Image 1 (cartoon, rainbow, N blue to C red):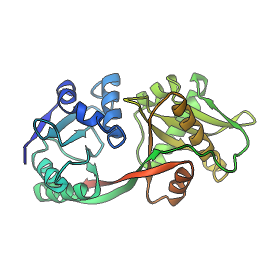
Image 2: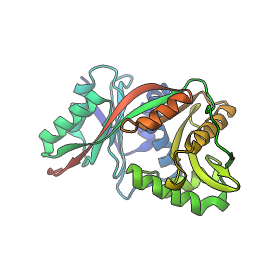
Image 3: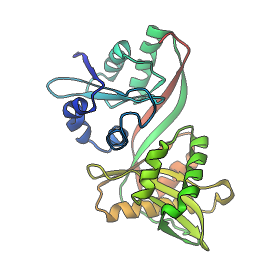
Image 4: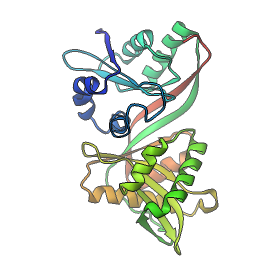
Length: 282
């Protein structure tokens, strides 16, 4: 197996691994949107530590990774032996890993190798499923109200809801990224009698792809169909822009949301495992 090539230079990484990532914007949605964020907001968009990037395979990459502050190492699918590539990465990663986000076998292999190297103990953060929109199916029972694009006048509410989402989900976009999505018309609200009751955002379009996130309904308004309705609205807006790959991630521990998105026409693509690490000497 080839060695991992590791760099802190975004341009070097993009030149080497960018075509590999863009060849499958659905599966590499997170990598592409993080790269876009780093270009737009600077290398410290996710925290004060410098990001690290890498790829393996020559002349063409067969896998790549990103490591940004406070986020798990984000590993692509691997063309070949995922376990070997993941173990090799864990052995040479030049920074401390807070966790790993990869397809299940690669996540397990990385965690085992990282524990052997550092003594860190892996623990489960989340099991995710990636979905791609096939054909949008509006909710069978539309709730009252309608959707609109959020504006700067909604900033305080949107930011408060983003904080609520991050608190419940355990993760969220940096505030500067959230503000940019609001300013660029990528956040939709569902309103009833002029009162916003739910929100759905999406990432800026990249290579014909956008990812729906986050979807949030305050507790007082849940179980009324607002989340499904606003997800359908933001999905329709992406379709109207001519985007081919409209994707989203779900938490597999939440069967309700998985059922809602499948009813809207989203179809499973791949599963990923997020593991955190505690202790160790990294």
